[in-house]
Amino acid sequence: MKYTTIQYPDLSIEIQLAAFEQENAASEFYAIFDFNQRQTNSAQQFNLLEKALQRLQESCELSGSILVWKRYFVSDAINQASFIECDRPEAISIVQQPPLNGNKTALFAYFVSSAELTKQTDGCVIMKRPHYAHLYHTQMHERSKDVENQTTAIFERYKNSLQQYSCTLKEHAVRTWIYVQDVDVQYAGMVTARNDIFTGEGLTPDTHFIASTGIEGRYVYPEVLMLMDAYAIHGIDPKQIKYLQAPTHLNPTYEYGVAFERGTAIDYGDRRHVYISGTASINNKGEVVHLQDIEKQISRTLENVEVLLSEADTRMTDVAQMIVYLRDTADYEVVKNYFDKQHTQIPKVIVWAPVCRPGWLIEIECIAVKEMKNAGLMPF
View 1 (cartoon, rainbow, N blue to C red):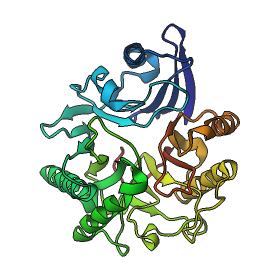
View 2: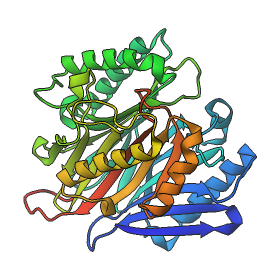
View 3: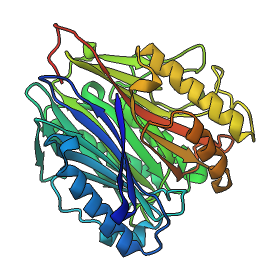
View 4: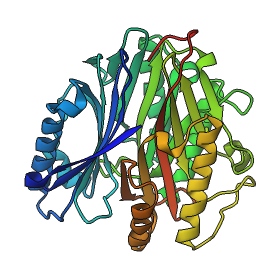
């Protein structure tokens, strides 16, 4: 992975960019946009962010790549959503997870070269390459009476949408991001509904689940208790998918009643994509490790991430982006100082988002990309 830091001093914006580039193959770019000094005006921040995004798209660094997906981390979704233009061709996510550097927003953006992008009437964004179609469903939500009903309705809608593109939840869904308002109270209801959906679709401990992050997050509408983004791949063969377990460090999630994979690796003819689920300071008995000690929890969480990556024959130097979630805002300086010394080049953002178990002070997810050569598979 090639890492670059781009400064736009006139916009007060710094971009951490990870580039995966191969000769005669599609390039991928993962970017985190953040302000390098405090900005207090919401309208100004979003305006500067859009200018920086456009400037990067037009720059030589991206080699004519198209913007596929962007996620805004915002401090106040109800009041800030109006600053975001959603009538755009790319997939767009908005989640209230305040950046902990004191600014009102940060942005993750994903670009791919030599691709075609279309937005369907149901909101699904499809990124087409010669051999695969990549499906992005974002901001899926419902306003029914409770979190279980909302979760069930969202997954049913997602299943129906996948079916339109000859895909299923079991065979083609690779990754979900589930944001739960008031996670300490509502998470259990989301889990119950998801478990029921998965069982009905044949997703069990004997088959597999889906890599996922389930964490605190709010949407534009206060009555929305569960918000979901999802990624699926049309044209993928189950033989191209490996589910990561790291049994020396982590236990299967079903042992404590939830249903997601610790990580998933996707093999193409020219590369491997690795999606590490939200990972915390946990051992292979499902116990929280280092209660109330943020420094030790950072270390154990990253150790777990590295073991999962190694199972997919990847390393931290292959990581393209990282999202760091903190329960306690007072831990920000400790975590920032840690990352200022470790893994400094990886594009990352640190946000406020309590994890699903109160004892976990930090959770980390990431995406990695590694060059692979497999003549038996079609390239990405």
